[in-house]
Length: 116
Image 1 (cartoon, rainbow, N blue to C red):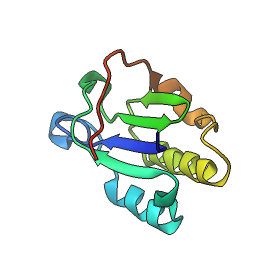
Image 2: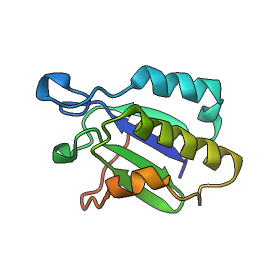
Image 3: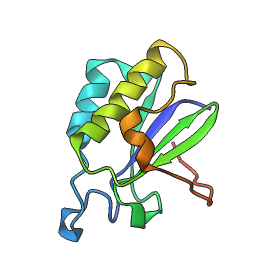
C-alpha cells in the first residue's frame, strides 16, 4: 500500500458556511511541492470521507495501517501533517504521528475505499 495523506475537503470539512475552519489546500499543495513529497507520500484531497461529526478529517495510510485524525482547526495541525510526511519520506512509514495530532486521533469502524 502506498503511503498517503488523504485530506477531506467535502460537504462539511472546510465548509466555512457550516462554521468549520477552511482546509488550507494551497498550503498543503505548496508544502508537498516544496519538499518533493509526492514520490514517497501521496497527498490526496478528497471529497467527503464520512465522519462529518469530526469535521476537517484526514486519513494517514501506510503499510502499517490507517490513522484517522479529525477536528483539525488550525494551520499548525496541517503543518504537523507536512512534518509527518517529511519524516516518512526520509525514514520510513513507521513514524509516529506528531504529538499535537494525538488528541485528534479517532477510530473509524467503516472501511473507506480511496479511488485513484
